[in-house]
Length: 137
Image (cartoon, rainbow, N blue to C red; front, side):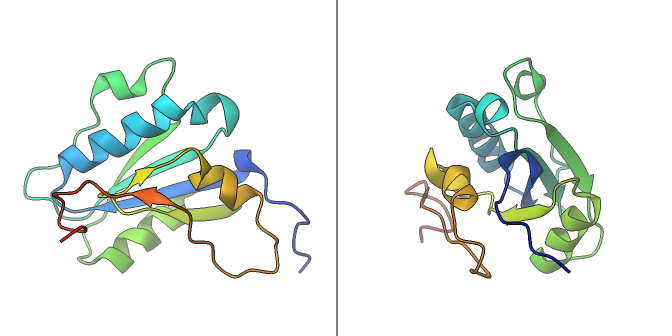
């Protein structure tokens, strides 16, 4: 198997496993939209609802003309690993970038991934964490 020489941003699927964090998804997708990922990086975002007590909804304003390509997947098998796998199973991209729903992407979250040297097996980009979130605690 030949490894591609360069990671192409239009071949990245961003997978976000979520359980009971509607506000986190709203912030994360809004941030990607504000960063212009849909025009510059063309990343696909797959939101995987992993057994939320109140099913996640993707507000219509997040699917407008300036929004990122967005997909909603339901995963009935509990646990973040199962949710990540469910997202990977439907991903259209050649590359997977997993973000948690409490993270806020920065301008370099995806672009840093694209510019990595393909000898790495993982990439940890810079993300901002909301100060009062479970992840921050």
